[in-house]
Length: 287
Image 1 (cartoon, one colour):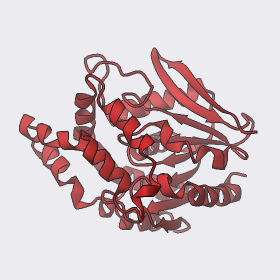
Image 2 (tube, rainbow, N blue to C red):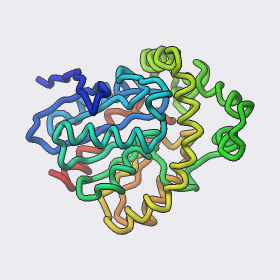
Image 3 (cartoon, rainbow, N blue to C red):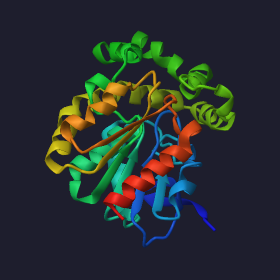
């Protein structure tokens, strides 16, 4: 019987919540969630993997059940979040691991890979972008804030935090929206509504420009180290579009690129298919 454990660990004074399953002696897979979600987005994927792998899924700082320090004491940048998650892996003693990166999890995970390529055994990117051609026009309001970080442009992004936007992220591009449980998006809306979280999320939307600026470094890492890559993409994602998946082959020609008929949160409808693809891929590359 598979057992999922719900844990909290102190990482340099910051309490990080994480889910774990599988034998500690098995190869590790680190699951990194996206916006505006948390590790609960992996509730259907973890059972697909835990019989064969040690699965670890943290909530990023400012998300889910992980502690949300105030902005005056913690700067919400992707670099800082990556540093925390890097230390999290060290505190847990995860010396080597495969990455599953989605949305915000991609810039966090790729920062870990660029800094410590020797620790990364494989990369599964599910709508986790690293190429300009993968960025859709849906980012235009965010790019306006990058170019002119005024209060007006910042306030214009508050719509990204609204419940109707969460619903859109979960259901756009899904063949049958009735297949998408409301539980995940309602939990995300609960976390977004916490006092002060709106400003945290706006800080991160503004800082996302640093991720785009890193694309060249990420691509160089992929070319130089050739990690095994599985790009499995919800092909109807309105934010990170299919050319971003295909682009991985440019730097890792052996990359396995697959598409499922879903949207951004492809695990909501295709966890079984994605889990099967991951088991096949990981068995080939990490055992």
